[in-house]
Length: 275
Image 1 (cartoon, one colour):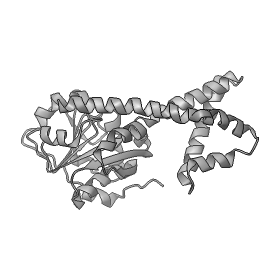
Image 2 (cartoon, rainbow, N blue to C red):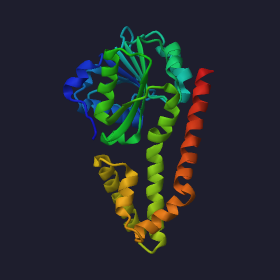
Image 3 (cartoon, helix red, strand yellow):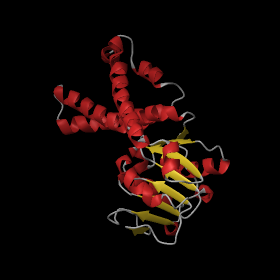
Image 4 (cartoon, rainbow, N blue to C red):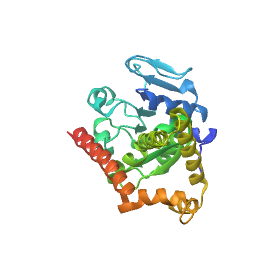
């Protein structure tokens, strides 16, 4: 079940909040926080264009002088760290939250000093508040954990990662995962078209099938493998199709190779950020 924050959870968040960068992901997160009770008047968005912030939020192109954020959310591309870090180094917020893939907590702490640093990896469905956000921090302080969860829970499932070395794998699975699911949906529709279905009808059927199966898996008290076996009657058509996917662990090997490629790229970006 998705664990959403209540309005009172936002009281755990040090305010005011500044967000540096506000692209698709940052904007989606900010709208989710506001829906959970974050006061837009407590938020400042800093972008090069001054665009992208939801209504009611102050949007600027330069850091406001003589002001300091209590929570600083870093939502730029990892490649922009070298540009923005020197500008932010003197702010020293209570909490620094970074969604930069591949940039480790100790690197962030050195480049942008803060009382506590949290790495967060949200995935695209946070835009509809059904996402996954992985969290990691070297801080064990209860107030830091509560503040990070106040940001993550309105967006969907929040999962703490105990070992930062696992973050690249988590990013490959949950962060990149929606892209792989979208590609699978497209392939499922293309296969239906190859069997003679009209393309648009095949697409609707594929997407609705994935949505229903995903919702069922979330509510089930058994693993997805068990659900697959329940659908597949011995000797039936589903079983014949599963036999193709299961032969020589073909699907598992394909997805392992897929996630491994993403994990390696995350590691490469981490090495680049370390310098």
